[in-house]
Length: 321
Image 1: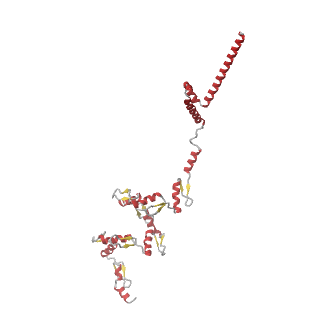
Image 2 (image 1 turned 45 degrees about the vertical axis):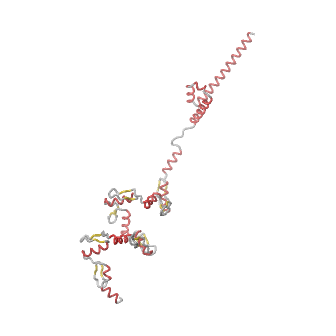
Image 3 (image 1 turned 90 degrees about the vertical axis):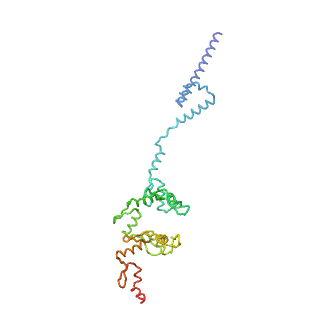
C-alpha cells in the first residue's frame, strides 16, 4: 500500500510538473509573440509589472493603445519624395503655351487672362455703367471713377490719382523726364502712347478709318471727333448758358467768355487773350507776317477772313465770276 501511495504521489507530482511546464512554455510563446509584434511596448510592460493587475477598463485602454501603436509601426513610412510630390513638382514647372501667339505661362491664371486678348472675352462688368473688362483688376480700377477714390498722391503738388500709373506719368511734369524717344528724329516723350502716335507721322500709318466716309486718322480720338460731323453729336455742354459743343476744347474756350479768363499772353506787348488762335493772329502785328493771299491780285492778309472781305473777291462775286 505504501508503494502504491508513493507511486500515486509521484504520478501527481509529475502531472503537476508537466502542467506547470506547459503553462510556462505557453507564457513564453505569448511573450515572444508580443515582443516580436511590439518590442517597445513589451519593454514598457516589463518595466511596470503591476500593470497586469490593472482594472479591466485600463487593460482595454492598454490593448487599444498597443493595437494603434502596432498599426503605426507596421505601416511603412511614406517617402517625402513620393510620386505625388514629384507629379506636383512637374505640374508647377509645366509651361502652358498659347496656341495663337506661342507665348508661354507657368501659372494657369495668367494663361487664362492672356487668352482673353485673343477671344475678346470681358467677364467683369461695372455695376454702375455696365462697362466690361477682361480682368478684375481693371474693373476695380475703373470703379474708382465712380466712387472718386484716389489712393495715390503726388509728393510735390499733392494732386491725387485713382491709379498709380497716372501718378507716375504726372510726376514727369515735375521732373521733366521723357523716357520714350523717337527712333527716327530722337524727339522724346513723357508717355509711351504719345511716342507711338508721333511715330505715325514718320510712317504715315492711319489705323483709324471713318465708317461713313473714306477718311482715315492716325489717332483714335481724331476719328471720334470727326464722326461727330456725321452724327451731329455735341456731348459737351456749357454749365452756364447750356450751349453745346462737339469738342471739349471748344467748350473750354467758350467758358472763358463767362469767366473772363485770358491765359495766353503776347511775349512782346504783354497783352492777354482768351484763345491761342487770337493771340497767334495778334502776333502777326509784331512780325508783319501775312500768310493769306488773294487769288486774284495776290494781296496778302494777316487774317483769313480778311481775304473774303477783299474788294477783288467782292467785285468777282458781284459779276458772277
